[in-house]
Image 1: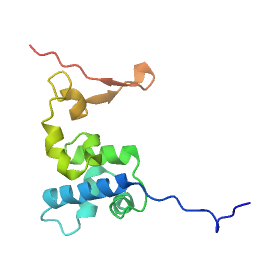
Image 2 (image 1 turned 60 degrees about the horizontal axis):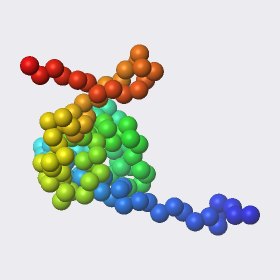
Image 3 (image 1 turned 120 degrees about the horizontal axis):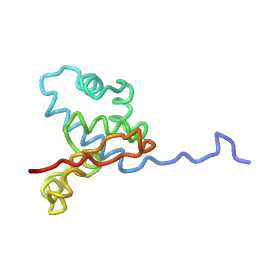
Image 4 (image 1 turned 135 degrees about the vertical axis):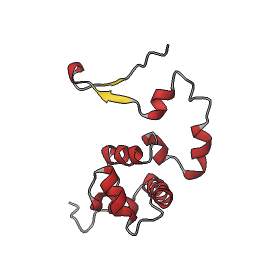
Length: 127
């Protein structure tokens, strides 16, 4: 029977590295003047400093809520934080971002209490 000493540790996935690299690059740009960039991000994202530090050190995988909080600070859809940096520019201008699909790329969702908590896309009337 395996015990704690004989179990193999799960190897961290590549997405931790991609997320950490993207967050570091975005912090360099947004918090150029800050002496403590992780603290500034934690404050703006309303997450704990330890969550930011664990994400940046690749110590643990970030939760979806934390990724979403980071994305809101940088005004990006959450999925873009999980895309390798070189692809970000291409994805932002991809043909998939048609006017009909643009709300999906902007993270234009809200929580609807009446629908039992399901997320619904806001519909804007263009006129």
